[in-house]
Length: 351
Image 1 (tube, rainbow, N blue to C red):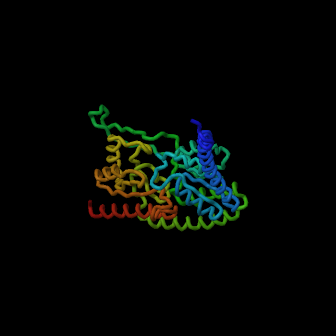
Image 2: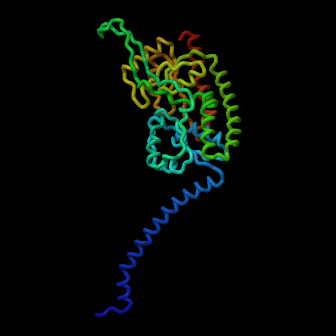
Image 3: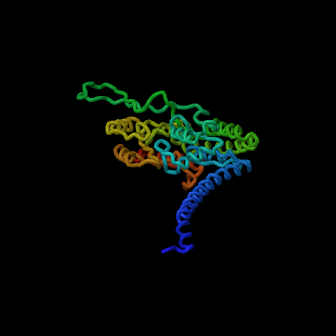
């Protein structure tokens, strides 16, 4: 039985149709991919044609400072999301794209955001202008927790004193942005110099914004000094050693840190030593942080009859009351002053 011409033609066309469908699916997928890439490149091109430069910062407060200084000439992105810790952050694939299109990358440095090196390698951005803000100011040595503990006779060292090093020596504390005077005098001018390097036409614009922002930082410093002046000399124990620059500026003292190293759980022996230190130095304030579980800070506070205060070194654009650098620093100083006021009142009551 013979097929008619239409059937024969139908059977002959089947493989070709299947090939055509596969080709169309492949072509559509390729077009979609190219569309995404072209859109990203187009947005970057439009940004640069309009005078904007793309800046990537590793943490939110530095991103906010850059935005204040760069104004309408910059588009700023923060890699670290609100609520995350730079000490334990794992970058996302989208962060590689941010890095790849950036004109300027601003890091903290000194080991705080070392993960950005992986992104730079993946993005092939070795020639992109970079600034580490810790390179712009005088640094404090990283904390070495030395606690003098009188040993018991059972230890074999009667009345001997031992020091315990919990951090590596020879490193520096990276939390420089928590001192607004350093931001005003060192970090902000360094950021403006970097902006002007990649955008020479905007130099005078950045300089004028720098002067305005420095005036705001001077007001901030005066406000924080008024808040904390009554509590000069107060000692506190931090969850991790982030607050020494702020403490040094306003006459406080970070006596020790619960975490011997960021991300490392404290041992029972270390917590026992902290209790002895707190009592010996009257360090009744325990500083917890919003990025970390407060349970250990609360346990230590209960053991020494202290006061827990929750501070935030990072904030973020969607964090109420801490969305800008200025708001963040006011929040921390206000909360610290409240805790010190409570300690003073309890001491006056004989508690």
